[in-house]
Amino acid sequence: MRKIDDLKIGCTGGGATHRDTDIPDIATKVRMVKEAGVFDYIDRSPPDEEFRDLLRASERYDLPVLASGWFYTAGRDEPLYERNIVKARLLGSRIHNVQLLTAHADGHVLSDDEVAEFYLRAFDFGMRHDVAPCFEVHVNMWSEHFGRVERVASLVAARGVEFRMTLDHSHVIFKIDNPVEQEVQGMRADVEAGRVVLDPAMPGNVCRQWIDSGFVAHAHARAAVPANPVNTRAKHPDGSYGRGIQYPFMRPAPGEYHADWDESRLEPWKSVVRTLFAHHAREPDSMLGQISCEHIPNVDYGAGQGYSIFENNVACARWLRDEWGRAVENCRETTA
Image (cartoon, rainbow, N blue to C red):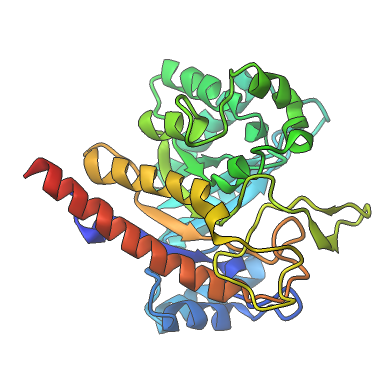
């Protein structure tokens, strides 16, 4: 039976800042995460010039770096992945979140077979260093068409290897009732035909499928709502607004957020967390070991907003702890 300590709750390094206008150095980030009193670890894959500072800060504040992550282009970044795995091992990380971009370095869109081959190579190298790669569901990545996840997992399983993923369901939730976003990778037709179900209240929804299949070994917690408002307070270099994949977890003060805030709209996002926690509490073979709070200040997320990114992560962590405690207790009651 699961215990409270069987799930660690952390904060990503990107989330240890109040706003995008004043980003702290890594030592300050580690201190902030430690002193908040609600996090078990920090989640960070440091650039080379930051590595020693992160290692020293982790030791000074007694805050482990249990998780890391980066984004990769197949055909170019395989050596970068290996360097990051070595750094992760030296920092004591046990998982590495992998964001694999949709296109190969030569420009073609990766096939399912190519994603599976990248996964198998990544898994082999990572596990030799005791750092498990977890492939993330994420925009701009191969997995933005959510129907591909099951297909790639099947290809990996056919080679006798378990598929491990990072569940960041904000990327699913914000596409609900959002036809423009569903058009990416041609997923809208599959949604309208019922082949891909986004709504976590509906049978056969993708989040429940991934959880029940036992794929989830890591998770990110960033609040989002159906048809999440586009971030009109920040633009990409091409002039487009941020895609809007972040909703304040706690009520913003007047003027701190560019749209109306309604706590009830968070319920679909929260329901997936409860499903994930119930599964982890119940299933002895669940691979989930940690969940990283990841409200962040990037353009598609919280850039330009007035609310505190970090305070939202702290509030989210408190809620996660309460929900995990309830999941453990519910499991005890049903098995007694």
